[in-house]
Length: 113
Image 1 (cartoon, one colour):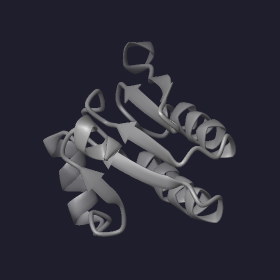
Image 2 (tube, rainbow, N blue to C red; image 1 turned 30 degrees about the vertical axis):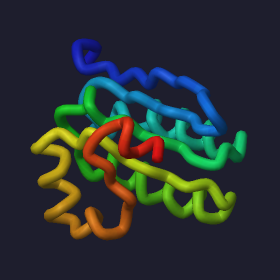
Image 3 (cartoon, one colour; image 1 turned 180 degrees about the horizontal axis):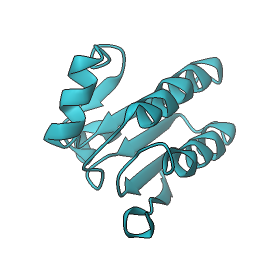
């Protein structure tokens, strides 16, 4: 599994935190994303953007992490925005009927607005 180890880059800019995970988001990798999201939301920026351009696959555990984070962000009054969903990841969101639950932007620039 080391070949698919997930990482999350974090950038803070203009009152936002941008998280850029890379790698597959399965059962073993989602805790890395969960930790990054919790840390970002705890800082209470006005917006947390999750740029999923580097995620080619997302399993149920990855979706659960994002749903949990959406709840946490709402409790903290932090806007959570996803962007750059790859086709396979977008398909998972569509199948799970989560595309309408999240704010999903096409590009990072759009997510920042």
